[in-house]
Amino acid sequence: MTYRGKRVLVCGIAKSGIAAARLLKSKGAIVTMQDMKPQITDAKKLLDEGFELYLGKNPDDIVCEQELVVLSPGIPCDLAYIEKARACSIPVISEVELAFRHTPCPVTAITGTNGKTTTTTLLGEIMKRAYAKVAVVGNIGISYSAEVEHLTKDDWVVAEISSFQMESADSFAPHISAVLNISPDHLNRHKTMEAYVAMKERVLLKQKEQDFCVLNMEDCVCRRMAEKTKAKIFFFSSKHVLEEGIYLEGGVIYVRWADIDEKLISVDELQILGIHNYENVMAAAAMAICAGVSMDIIRSVLRCFCGVAHRIEFVGTLNGVDYYNDSKGTNTDASIQAVLAMRKPVVLIGGGCDKGGSFDDWTQLFPGRVKHLVLIGETADKIEESAKKYGFGEISRCPTFEKAIETCQNIAAEGDCVLLSPACASWGMFENYEQRGDLFKKQVRDNLR
Image (cartoon, rainbow, N blue to C red):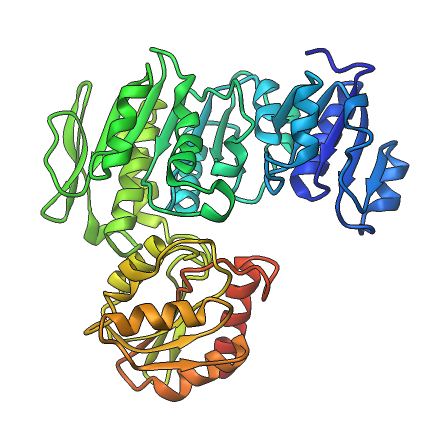
């Protein structure tokens, strides 16, 4: 599509929406930016840049005047004005789709329920060691649209892709994709597990024979996705020896792929903990191999990689108690991995905004592992009921997050660990999981001084 002189509506005036609007304007589009908030911080600046603003309501009365609608990730696709646009034969695309259409270089894309940020960050570090220019973008917090105009055909994109970003992605087709795992998440938006899985599959559906797709052999949903893409499949496994792929055996990661048949690294050499992180390492390494990166470069980065903020992040030790920030554990599967990674009795902070799933898989792990559970937020009743179903009753309820941290400090004894891994979204109490994790780290570190 040629954008010069075209009327385009960008919905959602946050980081992704602003970047998309600027990309479109650079291509000559006439851009209207819409947001449900009646006032926004950057209003004057955006007006000065030549954008029209439509604030405080849905754009039902202007949507059919547009020639393209671009959605930020936070905008659900089932809103009435979006259906109206489609009825008027107006294309509706996501910000990621817009950026992909303008990308001149190969794209690697990582999706899945958990591990996306760790894998994306790790792959980005590996690729930067091998290539001159690598843009690490997407759900990781850096807008894809903000980077595309700085890229050439010789560069690479490493993109973390969420199910939200795939809802209106029609032609998105990375050269190398990965689906790490699938478990129930975001059902409050996608409504059914089938719809959620369908959004994840979109990362690989348009790939061609010359492309690569990295999949988790141990996840039955991921394994079945191999039948839905033309790309060459590169499996990783934490439980089985593979004739072709990358796998974990006896604490060592091995690669059998093309002309490679050798040990990659021992998990004892890694700085990050847990089987889930070993799977993230295997996925990132597999993608890097597909991108032509040498085993020596991959090894050297793996040995130095310390993980990402808010994902089983060690904060410090106070009075013999270790503190870990896993605020990015926003669903039960992620929080299960965090609990399993702990090597000491756990005083656990859980709860927050309900995304519509069951907590049973998480709470049944508590007996024998969790010393005490401290609950916050709207899901407290639901989590407590689930925990008691499995005979776990060492539970406290706290009205504020700060009180929850204080309660943990009073309960935890030398040799224990305090783990923030809520299994819930942060919305309602915090702007995002980063703000929640940062407050946890600040309160703990203030006491370390």
